[in-house]
Length: 494
RNA sequence: GGAGAGAUGGCCGAGUGGUCGAAGGCGCACGCCUGGAAAGUGUGUAGGCGGGGAACCGUCUCGAGGGUUCGAAUCCCUCUCUCUCCGCCA
Image (cartoon, rainbow, N blue to C red; front, side):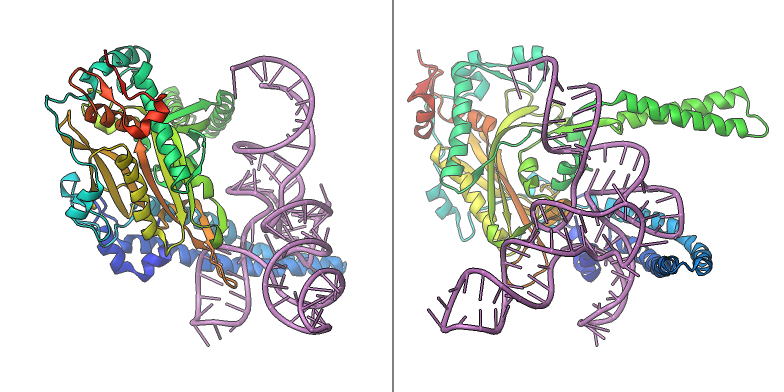
């Protein structure tokens, strides 16, 4: 979310930068017009409040001196000027909500080095801060070669038995999978390996967060209010409260109609009553009477919100959190995409990294976090490339994003396995997360937040299966995972 | 699920309609004292918004949001969270 004062001071820069993002038509002039109205009402309201407060204080003094006559006189004076205050307050609230609503749907601005583009075809391969294709190739595992035609993960011998989509469909429908036996263990091993790597070697604090969160947390990281349809909601309606308030509103409504002159016809009363019913059904459906929980689409949400509504000391930064959690996504906009196999699921495990930094260090932290994610694939011997996302392909809250794309020989293509983003103070503003710079009497500043997968466990499982498959349908276990597999060097052999 | 109690500054804690953004203590910062330190002592110590070049001024915030009142930390309503007892439960 943006600071309207910043937009006012940098209107041209804002317009230029915001126009780089896809599907955004907002202009600084629209926002500043709302802000002008907001400031105008604040000035008028403050003046009225100042007068009221001064006179009220005098009333208190007069009463303390038992000067009842003077008190009455002052009270009459306040009553006259007071008319404006309630409407002024309501107006201020309304215009502030309007400004907030307008600001909260504007995506973050891309950094200058982010390439301009419409979709994933305009992403640019990235070789590191000072890297080249050659230096990157030396660091990264080579593409494997096969003496046979490599299969997709769900066709490989070991997976045919233990990766069960049919039974998952019976339990939960499409886009779910049941893993069994050594495949299930392999997935667990991958998750443990990755989390251990980040906590023991990369300095991340292991966190076990809630998987159900409130609206506020999702607003903080930017999934709400704009991306409801990507989330699963778990709500419990309070029907008693709904019913009580509905009945009360209904009574008031009837009373109004009883007072009407002449009395409205029965059809009119019925029509109006139906309209009301519909409104209240909508309220119920919108979750107004529910305890609203959302299933996290990524552990970025709980991990980043760990610092919400707090003022940290600069010395505490950077904070680095990592978690291994299930993630839940409705995949509403992906009908028909990746329907075979377990590439795109409603539920999947992921190891997530989150860093909380100062404004000065977030760009360096971004490169560091990318390296942490890359280490996972390097240790597992998986070939990959890094893409810098173009403006059209970046997420809502990001200023710059790197995607790690792992090589899937069965699909003969690279597929996203990790996404590492720097968000600047965008999320921090939404969740009021600040730090106090060290030194004397410094005002609090917003922290910078970063998040990255390190990496998606389900997709990593696919990559291990496809890259280490053998002609007989067995799969070799990468050395780094063997300790987590009880020393096994392969699974699915005869 | 039932019954009850509560939420005040970085922390503890006083305050039940008037000069209270808030006593007192702890902590922290700076100074005095000291050869140096401790002890002692003095001063200062929230955030947002608006106005102003600035000093500063105004306004809002005592869990959150509404309301009553000339005036609310204090009264009323809703919500969130915490604690105690009972019940249920992995």
